[in-house]
Image (cartoon, rainbow, N blue to C red):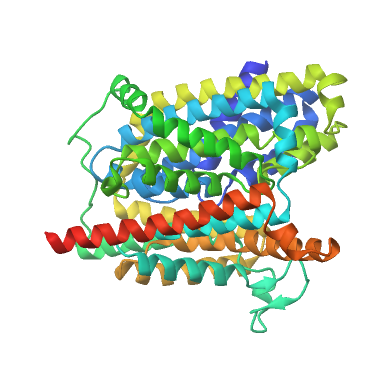
Length: 490
């Protein structure tokens, strides 16, 4: 029975993750009431399997139609979709599948065997550490900017400005709402992502319909085929990228509230710096897919470490799982592993088993998923628009989110005409709120400790991320200078 539940959960999670707007958090939240009809261990196993499947599922639409089904798949778009456009969507999906499997297994093994030790590390991340983690993430905006660093930085600033709209979660005061009730709740990241990636892509499909006089424009799948064996061999040759993505994803998972989107983007940036194929990133580089997918799936397991041991969720979806635990009478802490060991370890081993189902479904279904690229534009465009509206409204049952999605989608469509990339805007939006909360909370804590400098500047983890932020900026400046010199020489 448990095996069937895991299989159904992973399959359902993949479907949820592949649909724009239906995020892993929403998928798990929708299933919580249904767990009352199952035993406690079966209910939690189902939620864990959906979590695993939905994080991976977002990569499918990210690769095939340039739309991240889940926020954690933003980085996958950067190389996944270019690879698909070259006629290799199946190869891209298989790379994402195997990388997700490896990252996911390692993340869950860390959860099973090292929870107590790693939970102490999680406690070290206070508001000041969260602020500097966000600042480090913001420094990678330039590295994500394919073609023009200036345009990428402008996009990042736009995203940060969007994150300040609405009522402040710290002070409770409304900002930049312009008297519009629709903006009081702020710009929801999911609604924004749907507009920036999905709606703008749908408008591009409409443009193709008119530019080709209604003729279908599809990707040629016969240009190059890659077997599963070749994909596995390619990943084994990229052990450095796989290890980098898994390590960063596992670490980011321990940070309360960070989530897979930060994990994959930070890992992607570090992979680009460490790779000897820097020029190929953004053009369909396998290293980008491997690192991004191993990172966001490794995050799944470690995000549950602070949840199960301390009651502190490491991601938004983990926060929903906390509600599932409490509703079933389970309290995070040592007692969860002692008094309720049977339930807890059934849940953990169920998540481990979910990784193997994910691998099987992804490898078997890859060639069928790839056929999505053969759907004509006149069918794809209306389908995308329908999912955009449904997904935006389903987030908070708010028409305002639909309006925000429409406005941002249309603006992004025109910005793409002048080579703006939606990824920096999305990153600025996601990290802007995270950085602001960390800054304001750290400021208040420093006042309570009567020392702004000692609290905000000289803590070990703070110093580490400060140095990494400076190095990140310095590397980007050096790389751009080197690239400019190379262009002048040629």
